[in-house]
Image 1 (cartoon, rainbow, N blue to C red):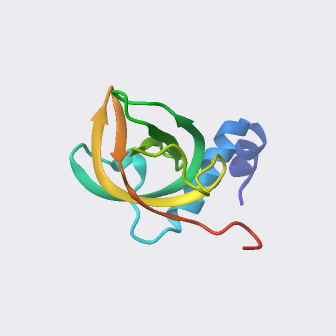
Image 2 (cartoon, one colour):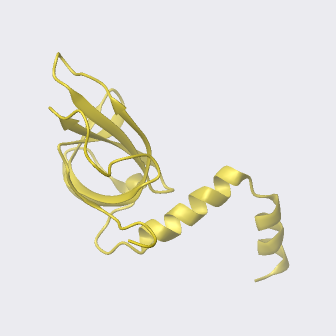
Length: 122
C-alpha cells in the first residue's frame, strides 16, 4: 500500500470506511448487481446489510419496509401484508431478488425473495 492510499485511509470519514467495507462484502456475493447499477423495471439480485426495518401500512394493508445498503446505494424492500419477518432486523445481511421499480424517487423491491446470511457463529 502506497503513501497516498495510507493517507486516504487515515483521512477518510467513518461513513466512507463503512461504505468501502460494505462494497467489498457485497462484491463477494456471486450474481448480485451493485445498487448503483440498478435500472427501473428490471429483475435484479442484490446483497447488502439492512439499515432500518419499519412497519408502515400502505393503503390500509400492513407492510414491512426495510432499507438495504451495499456501499454503492440503497434500496427499499417492501413485504405487503406482513407485520414482521423473523430475522429481518437492522444490521442483518441478506440477499434479495425481485423486480426493481421506482416509488417516490426510491428504488424498491416489492415482496422480494430473500435469503438471510448467517450471523457469525450460526
